[in-house]
Length: 248
Ligand code: NAP
Image (cartoon, rainbow, N blue to C red):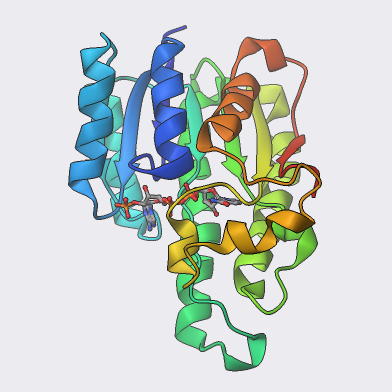
């Protein structure tokens, strides 16, 4: 089966590391992004320079029509998707629940929850052996926040990742007989730009003493687990979680 991967939020951080590693492992890769076309193009150019096949597609995963456009573009330019990495996710500035506006909550839930559901939906339609597909693998990028709760930082974000855990458990069972495996990674404290979105670029420095391994993680350390879950080496693994958070 031809290996074709969509990595949402593939222009930076964990998504970019995953896109590079997927290309190295023989996937044609769609690098989805929201605004940062230069960063997405850099990932694509670098993959192509190494002899790989990649395209960049701008699409807001929180918007249904843009998700439809993303998957249609992949159908037309790469072929039928066999691997989805539901990676794109956001968090908002740190604050307590009592200060969170409805607009903020909706933005986080639309992107992290609805966006992941919509992408999973479109992937299942193409992968399901019941719908003429050849099967496939979905990896959802959750967070250890789903079990830690992120008090005083972003409980909304943590709750959105709780929903992703439940999506993983339910969808894995729903599509298991259709040749599709669904798993999740739960990173924590990975050195990317996301902490700046929370208003604290040096967050890992502050919390690292509380991490059993006493350091933050690198995006590649998450990408390696994602690629294992996508691969045939994980052929009997579905509905499973790999925590990548230094023991926290
Ligand atoms: P990041 O460095 O902030 O990168 C976010 C990526 O998502 C960018 O490519 C961004 O595109 C894209 N994106 C944001 N909103 C989008 C939307 N609505 N539609 C499409 N793409 C969108 O994030 P990261 O740290 O690599 O995080 C990746 C995933 O890992 C997220 O789901 C995050 O919750 C999860 N995670 C991260 C950590 C951590 O410590 N870093 C820990 C646990 C879980 P642009 O470049 O165009 O903005």
